[in-house]
Length: 426
Image (cartoon, rainbow, N blue to C red; front, side, top):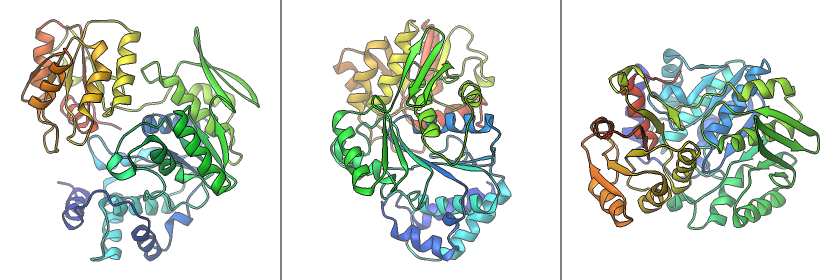
């Protein structure tokens, strides 16, 4: 176990509550650390339900193509905690992370704090103490009361498509959830929104108006449409004819376009069109419709195409289904879902594009019992069975002759798969 892993384990034991949305503890801790959140490079802040990570990946790729040094903060990680903090293009070194965590832990002492708050404070310290030109900041959960929402003046904020998720923390309806996520808006700064459900759109507009943000809305202020060889992005500044994004799935041009809109509607970090085109073809974001066929740990499975996706709500499942439909092939799925996720909604969204599923546990996590997932799948007419692990399920489906298998339902499960097959995020 590394030094940072030991500290992280101790922090989790001392502060076991994973989610407790509030800014007071975070503000107290940052004050004791000398307010690193006030010494950051220009910040792009990204909230939403689905597509946050992909949007950040496009922002990073485009900004790096333009020659900028880019800090990035995302969550959760897939395999190693270091993935959450990227310093000027590279994952934070182990010794730097250990030192930062120890400093934050010492300053906090025995005061109440959450794991995410401690680790976000450590990230802000890292970003303040290491030079870079830009910081990309992904919201952990919600927006208004998220630990990342202590940044006073981001150059732009973005809201990806919003759907029902984490209702126990954010609210029971789409409008309430949207208002929470739009809480990253700042006076005089662009709040760039993807196309939303009407209730979400109206809620975001109300928040923008209340704080004096400048709403930049897909379908009104900017738009994107597929073409024969890529997609076109258009706003009042003109059109960009762009190649298809590097990430898989017919939805990804929309995430790329949101990143483009975010860059074009701010005035502190200029980005040439050539860098936009080059960047979106170079973006990398593991476990989002990732083709892991032929990975080192899967070379014995030569007769099937194997995909991996960490989407865990009905909208995420619908995205997977759309990608499968866009490349028709007889497909089966290995599925694991955390216990707080909407199993019925997830299965219903995926159902039209898969012929069979095998439900599996997620070791180390509180997950839906595989037998429960099987019962729910069978209730909607989907052939289903249980396997003791994702690898057993995958082997069984390949043995049955499926030309394509998708492993999906959880980022935690996806991380375990990536570690096992030798595809560690870099």
